[in-house]
Image 1 (cartoon, rainbow, N blue to C red):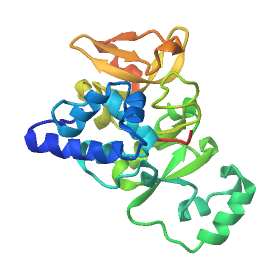
Image 2 (cartoon, one colour):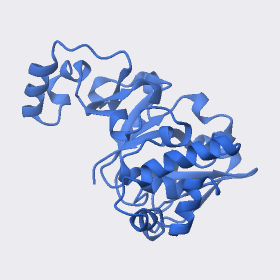
Image 3 (cartoon, rainbow, N blue to C red):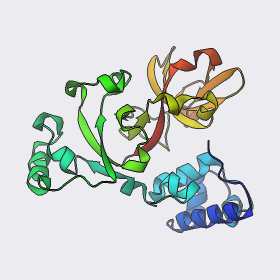
Image 4 (cartoon, one colour):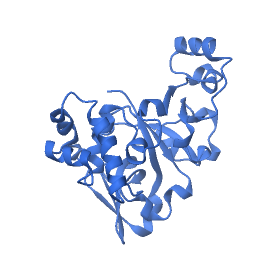
Length: 261
């Protein structure tokens, strides 16, 4: 995970962005309740006195509609909803066959409104697949596997030909991800190596046991193991340790997510 707290100036800049995010809430009390930390801790985050907890900040960012890239690194846009420009809301979607659009009425509206609108240079079209189909080689995807399209801010998609969108099922990653959320998964080898990159990352992995098959979880890395764990401790998912030599079970890295509660 990239450094976000590497000196007094960076700490103050991060604290200022956290304050901007916290100001979106009705009160410090509300922000602290969502973050799961004390109000005093929120004040320390804003002042740059304390290195913020990723999970605490991610929970607030999710509710406040703030992009984590903007929060950690100051990279625009600030709003997460501006990163994901919606489903089928540009020429790429307007040109997709009818059966790839979920709502026939929306299909007609899109075609009439956007058929002459070029896809902006800063945007890229990414296929939405079911999670099982996503495990196939991205370069070999055929249109029959595509259930819809997302139009994404290009800087969020460093490897367009190796990136897909899948829909979350269940609440094991709640409140960061809820059932039905969309996540962008990068399958490029450079996203997965070296294995240390996966520490503190959200990943798509193949697991055995009660939750057999593909799953999206947090990942922590030590010298000998990778451990998958859920955001929601009440979900029943027991942290799963994977030997480092089986790192290939981690199939992709989640680059961003989007959804409405």
